Amino acid sequence: GSDLSRHSRNDLDAVAAELNSRPRKTLGWETPAECLAKLLATAS
Image 1 (cartoon, rainbow, N blue to C red):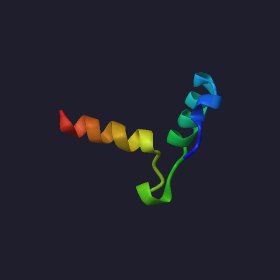
Image 2: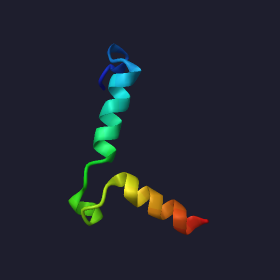
Image 3: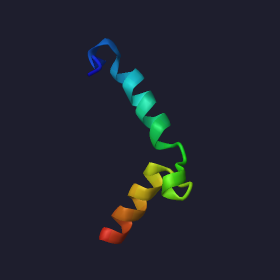
Image 4: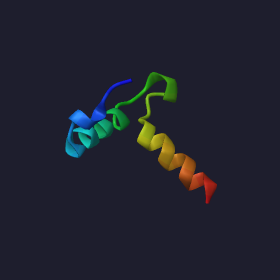
């Protein structure tokens, strides 16, 4: 329900990069980006 049009593309990209590079306990302390890379590597 938030209006994201108030924020610039650069601001939103910075937030996304920060969130995707933060290790998560639920992912075994890997980052979402690391998990996605593993998944894509095993899919090919």
